[in-house]
Length: 51
Image (cartoon, rainbow, N blue to C red; front, side, top):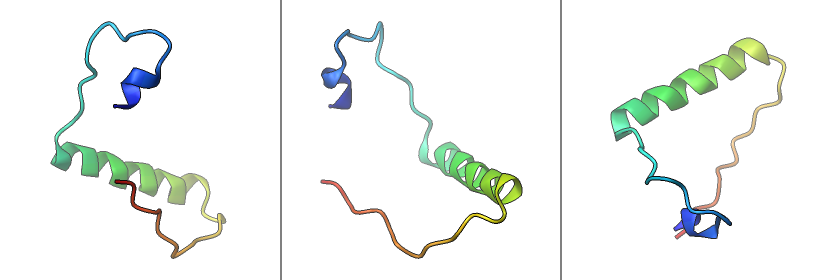
């Protein structure tokens, strides 16, 4: 688990949103990029999967 790599232990296990809320946040983030950086180059390359 990624948290094990931290030099100090977090005080508690972090909370994560459920998938629907997470995906809404992703969409809002991507929309904000279009608004704030409309001239940014676009790519069709996908991120590699990590197992």
